[in-house]
Length: 516
Ligand code: AHR
Image 1 (cartoon, rainbow, N blue to C red):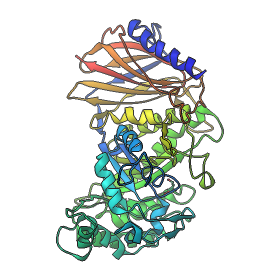
Image 2 (image 1 turned 180 degrees about the vertical axis):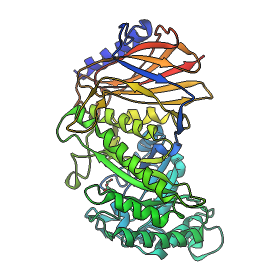
Image 3 (image 1 turned 90 degrees about the vertical axis):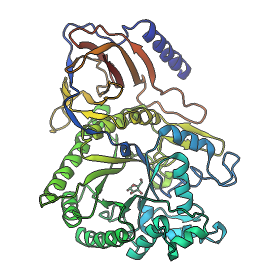
Image 4 (image 1 turned 30 degrees about the vertical axis):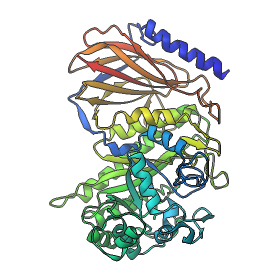
């Protein structure tokens, strides 16, 4: 069956090239309209939106990126096959070491000769931590995959001294105690770690060292002062709310008001789910995510009403689909085709708020709620891998404010939701518009008139599309080719700077439109 689908998709790809009519509607009255205008901009699509997250949890680090003694690893223990796949993800910024793990972690356990590092009981995930992967191993890994490191300090059970010493170990160039420890461990030059999170999800009662908003905000303020005293160049991310069942707005308000002159970002987290097994409801999560962004952006604005406000952005530094695999399953979610659609939807949300969401980290990178899965013999790529790679090509582009009119549906008593979930970005150097369209309908194709306002669109359109007959189709070891994107070129008949294109039911499409 899977071979049949792969072959069929391959055939469609070729037919797409030979017969540019595929998916180009000729209906006189398209059901939807998308208006593009490169003059209507939202903001730059920050490269940090394509970040990722590596927590000491399950097989994310040990058996994921790092497996000492494996024939698949290099001499330092990094899995070479994993590194190759991670490089394809083109991770811009990598958050570490947690997550919940961070709130019980003593970074000083993870430096120096590996055989002398203590094994500790790990309380967040009920595990043992060997400490064989620590700060130097993480920062070296970031260099190898060319990702910016982003360290989350322990503001749960940790102390302010621990936090400032960690900055000193990583960034101090003079001969201080912690900088010399770094040298002793083989690293002369400072690592120059710019991004630091002031704790993780401290609003969650599940967090080790959970605090009230006031307690956290005051503690974080003092930690930030000490960390900046060590290195004035650090960029700091406050722990915003992730506990939406509680007073998440009040938490974010207190944190922003207390830290308004100190932080560069506030972090928010969201995991989405399809527990009702209802595609259109699942793909309505964009409403919730955009509400979290809009409300937090409003709170940032109210915190910035004084003179010389400090710019503060949102770091969506944990996001993903997560609802099937929990601690017992070591969070090893098996992703399916509809999760790949949701991945595109979440990027669309970030692009539509590109002026305020300036960092985002998929949680997580390998094995644990991740697009890459390993065993001792190799790895496979989950369906969610592919939209991450493709959307990542739009980093640095300008997000466009797109006008959309499309048939809509309702979930409970929420506002109507268009079947087409749309974002667009523009690369002025190449004069290319990227139009990202998710058709959330489980069974309706949507023919759409695409109208362009400024500059003339050419009649060669590159199409990237993810679609599959089975919403629940998954990959496995030795079988990860069936839910893959198809690429083709089409030649729509462009008249008056507009053309008609049909977005198939339950599909994710990226059209690249060159301007003449
Ligand atoms: O990513 C898994 C966990 O989800 C993280 O440790 C925590 O921050 C969040 O609750």
